[in-house]
Image (cartoon, rainbow, N blue to C red; front, side, top):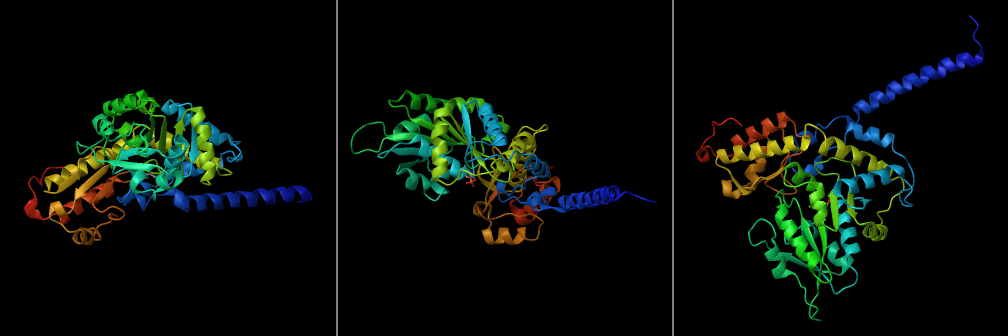
Length: 393
Ligand SMILES: *Cc1c(COP(=O)(O)O)cnc(C)c1O
């Protein structure tokens, strides 16, 4: 049979295209995006969540405008979306939570002398390589909560510097954290601090390190908008329990976000095809935080059940379980870190560094991994300390 050359050509290229497409599909199905085998049993942190296939699909359909020039559609719509969720005027995409806090603090402050007040356990004090002091020239005052759990207005009033004496570095920012080490800061305390801060002359800027605010909302402690009302700027992480590949976001007034744009540029955080970051972050919010049934609340439920079992077996906790973190008191439970780790190695779970004794629960932890963790608890705790070990979990 005779085919015109062009027709044969078409047949051939479409066949090749089909084979190529099947090849791509196989490659994607086998790629790291398509499974979460490692994160499924990794209790070290919720930042071990793996980006998902729907996130990869979102990257494929993202716009590829220039984010540095503010021209990318996907990024702009993502920023508007997050601002809307919080009830703030504007938002800006940044690369990490640390960058988000630094951008916000730098934008809130002008020139020294000035100070930032924060909980002494805060991320900005302990985990951001001193960025708040080196970038802002600020005196950072770490306050120990007098109730042992969270800062209250009394703690803030006692430690904030509101005089204008030339001996002082006046407090210009109060930086709170919610959740902090997995614990929830009650909304009424946040409101009281916020009202007081705003009544000062000049008003003290209220910043929230809300890396894990999603967890507090999931636990029913507050809504995003209730929190939004109390703060002038909020930093939210997209990579922790939400599992996006990259990114954090800072919200505030339009004027504040304009300043933040400049601070982000200073830190080298303005990127070109930022839609590649914003698109999967949107999926992380919609699928993981807002998805029904709530994947984050199922993870928190596992955390709660794990802490109940640990205590029933005679183990102690250093902090109560309020969201997705369980803090095992290893020495207080009659164990050494070495023994704890050695026993854990016999089970198909990952625990340990960066923080010994902390277990983080996230949406990719499977029921199977949870059962294995419970078996590990039974193996590691000395049987003599058990009180109610037959209770089902
Ligand atoms: C993780 C975290 C950050 C910083 O996020 P990175 O993306 O790791 O820089 C900030 N604050 C809190 C409370 C965090 O848990």
